[in-house]
Amino acid sequence: MELKNFSTLNFSTLIGAGVIATALGAIAQPADAFTITRSEAVWDNLTLQNGSLVGSKGVAANADNKVSLLNIDGESQIRWGSAFYGGYYQDNFEEVSKDVQVTKYKWDWVPKYSRRGWFKGYEYKKVSYQVTETVTETVNNKVWVPPTYENQSGLGYKGVSNLDLDLGEVFNIGTLKHFNQTIKNDGLAGTNTDFSLKLDFGDGIGSKLFDFSLSIDETPNRIGNNNNGKDCAYQTDAGKGCADQITWDFAINNGSTFEYENETYSLELVGFGSGFDGTTIVNEFISQEDGNNSASLFAKLVKVDTTQDIPEPASLLGLAGLGLYFARSRKKHEDALTV
Image (cartoon, rainbow, N blue to C red; front, side):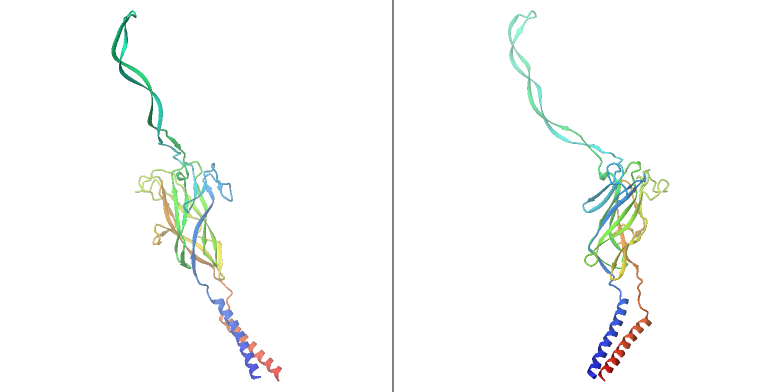
């Protein structure tokens, strides 16, 4: 009976310990460390100044709305606008061969006549004659070069890879580029675009998409005055057209989340910076006219909802007491069976 009671008590104690361990396990936090193996951007739903929406929620990108989605050397791009400099003639020098009539001279005996046409003999003189020769010359057959996407404005993104980071750590997620070219004021400039960041967390989490929205203020290209700022809305380099501004409409979208170890996470955009380490971060990207301007994009992973149904300490004691109750009840029951 003693052995049987010892076994029963040991088993019941394990039950109580298991209940407590389960409750304490609810308090344990997941490992808040992540690895991003790859990041890239998806552009969609570009709003134009004329009110048109180009993308999955509107019309398709085409030659009429001057919108194109590209991937150039790993950089995802969205381009818009009618190029102000609408093409040019490019020199095209070629070697061309052709036949020409050439006048040559020689000395020869030629008949000599009087004014009345009487033959008076021969005289030795220099005479001309025509020959056909093939000559080669260089000609400039200029060709018309139409405008390309490089003459349009737009945005580009090239992500980083193999990042190890902690929860809440601000990190450089990639390079945002503004192609600030001179375009026509015909309503086809972009004003807002969906900007979705696709992050690959590798095994265990996989790829996740985080949705944001970027706003673009394409300013009229008056020549700016950097000293007093009267001509332009944003800081502008002297002698250039007015700079443009890129901002985001929201820093975090709670609809774009992922679950990991019973926690909910999302990505928060922090700001733009000129360097990789993010020593200076601002919430707007000022892009000078007539050039391609880049800024590092900084973000951080955040918990969206950390609330859980965690038992209070008194409840934990209650669970422990419940385990002891199970042990005592089981012991009495076994003692009754062995009497």
